[in-house]
Image (cartoon, rainbow, N blue to C red; front, side, top):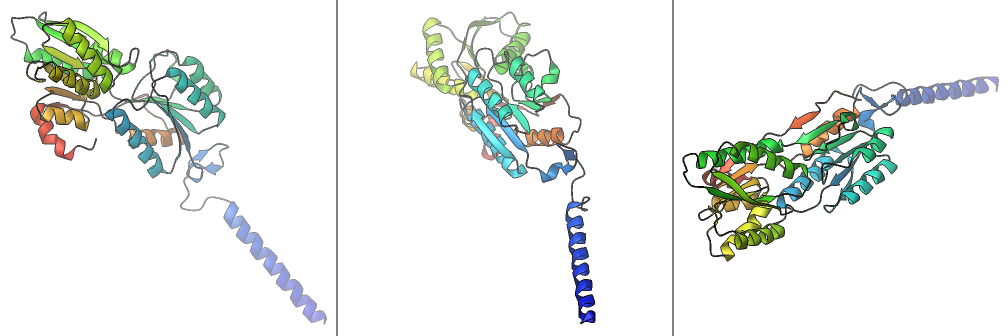
Length: 340
């Protein structure tokens, strides 16, 4: 009987040691395939936590914006992030409300495309005080405090305007007659509207024959672009050039030009920015003469930046996207393989 008790005790002790060893193996130390970077309290691997990204989009005002949204949603899914998406519907108050909601939800990172440049300091400071890093995409803010956000990913809008202005300068470099230009601006106060106008005016200033005779916001939409162009055509007998801050406004303007019995791209030279499929098709058809590309597929770059910020890595304060330009012939060649 004594022998049986000893064997029972030995078996029990062995089982306890086995369980203890297994528990220590599971919870102690990092296994060979775990990430070494940490997040939060410094003990949990960043890769073991789900990153929650709060993203506030400007709206759905154009084909460019739709492509931009899809790129971000697809890239977040591929990266395995929990994306909380909000559509501001072109209103800053909606966007500020969304950012505050993200702060309350304690998301890992906030990213947003600002509706306008000004008026963000208060809410950005709230995010900073809550320890939530912020990334700007597509559009910048004019805050003097650059510590309120980690980086700005997007196009150089001033350079886009310069490219448009340079092409127009080259086209009319030998003209002896005045060239009347009308401008369809983007949303008033937005970074792309401000900067695309600045870059364009900077370049055409060297040619006294190039004159902007009318400039008005079309809110980056096709419907508003058509409406404003109709007003331009009624107010001005001679319009030689249309400079539109995006393709959708240009496409709306084309409808107005055709309704007036004129040929877009022939009677009125058209310059646009974006290079989305509809715009590229219009260029291939000869209705838009020159398009400056603004790449909407920022999703992969954004997710890479989010991961770098979460991992505590250094990140460039300004990340510029690579872009090109298209004449009508170049648009025709590029259109079959265009992704957006």
